[in-house]
Structure formats: structure tokens, C-alpha cells
Image (cartoon, rainbow, N blue to C red; front, side, top):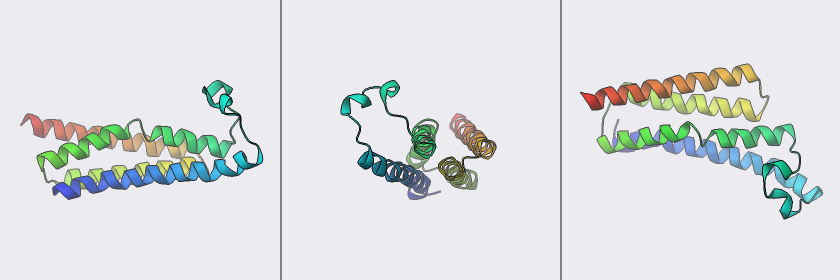
Amino acid sequence: MTNAAALAPMVALVFVTFAVWTMLFIRRIPKLKSDPVPLDAMRIRATRPILSEQEMAANDNLMNLFELPVLFYALCLALAVTGWRSDFFALGCWGYVALRAAHSAIHCTFNNVLMRFIAYLLSTLLLFALWVGFALRLAA
């Protein structure tokens, strides 16, 4: 895994995040045009207008993409800095991106909770394995 190859999965996940952000705004703009919301209503979540299920799913997924993926970004940067090359890291990082993209696609479309949870669980276990692999290599 070259330095650029270590960053490519990170960039791919950033574009997944941008895709979810775009989907959220595509879903919200028509509602805002038809039913304008006073700015004061946006101060805190409790006073915001009720979102549709599709808007809420995209909103929740966007927030998800700033939770555990932060550890993925850190790992990709650490791999780029160290220059460590390994099929384990290359395949694992791309696998993580694929699982997170699947999680986002499920969450933002048909939103099957069991399928979404499986994608989330597998991605989290893979991320954990990648960090254990990195820590072991660092300790060696």
C-alpha cells in the first residue's frame, strides 16, 4: 500500500459522506420551499419541525458518518505516514468503505434495520481488526 493508496479509501468515504449530504438537501429543499421554517425554530433539535422519515434517515446517516469513520480516517492517515504496505490493510480499508457505503445506501433508501445493523456491525468489527493489526505492527 503506497501512501496514495492508503489515502484513496479515505477519499472514497469522504465522497460517500458528500453523497449522503447531497441526498439530505435534495430531500429537504422542496419541503423548505413549500413550508418555510422560521430560523428561531432551528435553534435546538427539540424545536425543529418534524422531518419526514426519509429526511430523518439521511440526517441520522450523515451524523453516523462522523462517528466511527473518524477512526478510519485516522488509520488511513497513519498508514500513509508510516508507508506500511499490506494486502490486509489495503483490502480491509476498501472493505470498510464498501460496508459503510452499503450501510448508507440501506439507511437512506429502504432502511431495513437488520440489514443496516449487519453492515454497521461488520464495518465496525473490520475497523477494530484493522486497528489491532496496526497496533501490533506498531508494537513489533
